[in-house]
Image (cartoon, rainbow, N blue to C red):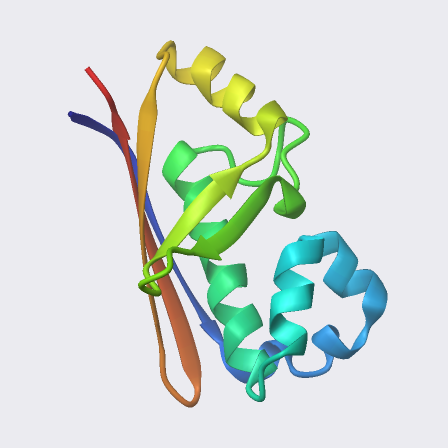
Length: 129
């Protein structure tokens, strides 16, 4: 596999404290599934902060930022049954990536971490050969 991009983002968790109380912000940044999952948690701030950082790290890894009609909700952070996080992309974003990098298959690796004040995400995108 060849690495075609990597990105990292760190966020101060308190930065999202007021924003996540606003429904418009939540619906613009997070998918319905992410919002539903957070509703079951006690510590929503760290949950949302890690996902926000992951989405930022992903667009850094592809080298575009949030341009070319790429939106936060095109990127969803999910967890495998064992808890390992992964990125799920909208069909629109998958098509964009295939055209941008001239590849038919790719693999996205995601690592998340948080503590009381900060959350961090690291993304690596590999082209499958």
